Image (tube, rainbow, N blue to C red; front, side, top):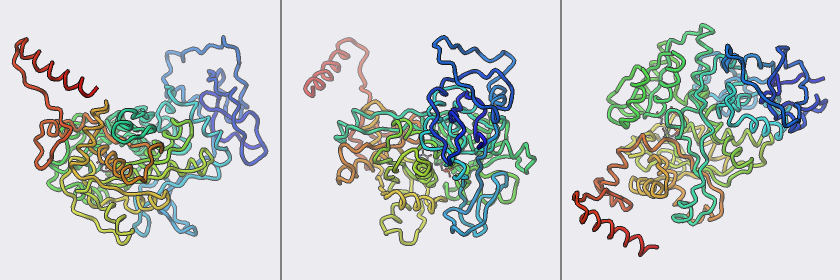
Length: 529
Ligand SMILES: Cc1ncc(COP(=O)(O)O)c(C=O)c1O
Ligand SMILES: N[C@@H](CCOP(=O)(O)O)C(=O)O
């Protein structure tokens, strides 16, 4: 009889109804999705699951008062056969180079990027229906650690880490918003969606990767590996996520920020979370160079997406999109790109779902860059001929003001393998797009404005059709970028028409004046009705 590979109990861990002799396990019976409180401490990995009672009177009781959710999770721990390791990114199939995830390594022997490779044969022992049902059964719960949108996919992320080492803010499970009015009014689209990854613990998608990286650091420190602190270079969001997760775990964090190039809201995040903040008189690329040098000399663990652990968490946003569409595949996914880890993370998430049979295809990917920081766009336009970094110019999309992206090879791979496209957005285009989106009830960041501009252009050229199901990935919370919105709505940006500005009306504090402006306003609305 094949060993039950994953989960101990039926508690959010659906198991095949019977042990099968075939290589692929059958989908779990829905019977097993009724969460039952475990009543025994016997090893669930070797204990066949007992059918859940079907009576509608079946009640659950709270765990005992002296137990917390980590303790409870420990009781449900089970043996499994899943594993992952570092391998050179896009390695030659005959390469045998690999590293344990418990090693501190960011680059391959040849100096190339690394990738986290999962034991796909072990994962393939379970079919697509199995994984879909398992992931679906964990959504919206508070069970440690599966209540997180990242850790609900734990077997595909860091299968071997113990629940005790995980540092999570129950990130992920972000809203997939149907942009009904924006799609209809500005694009003639009826199936447009915005994945709000920025509505998250620290206000950006970086939380998805950082929970994984900081959890692994937590484990490394318990294993007495030489990690005194964790460091990153940042345009604002990575540093916010790093400092928050480190603070939650009591681990020192060190952040290198380009002086005067990030928003105040982003600067105050690591300060508030107790990080050691260095404001350095250079740009992001300069900070990135410095953190790489420093982390090779000091016991500071590198938290930028050069570290492939981060992408394991970020890829869950792609899986989540499929899940939110009930495992139907959208036609397009548009992602703003800077250091270019995220576009690859999306590709990897979609690709794993296809390889493991959860879906039968992957969406086409679009990576969108600001024209002032567009090395990937130029590379794409040159027909992928030799890549040249650029000196990134100032952009309102300050978090993607990056000229020498560390994940360029990963991004090119993702785009080539998804029939992808790269677009760019001028400052005026991205700010107008942001204002238009906000005018339909969103409150997006300028980077999402970059992605929406790409969508405008691809709709205009007819590449994206009116009924194509399209997802725009919103990467940060608009509240981090209020100054750019204030500048826009004040109409005070040099050489920008600010066509959609909506400045407040100054009015005298008397009834007549207030009535006058209101009547004019209501008349203008009535004529458009
Ligand atoms: C808000 C925001 N959007 C988009 C990006 C781009 O992500 P990536 O660097 O993975 O391309 C970043 C960071 O670079 C970001 O902070
Ligand atoms: N936008 C990022 C830039 C660094 O990206 P990373 O994914 O490599 O950490 C930031 O917020 O710092």
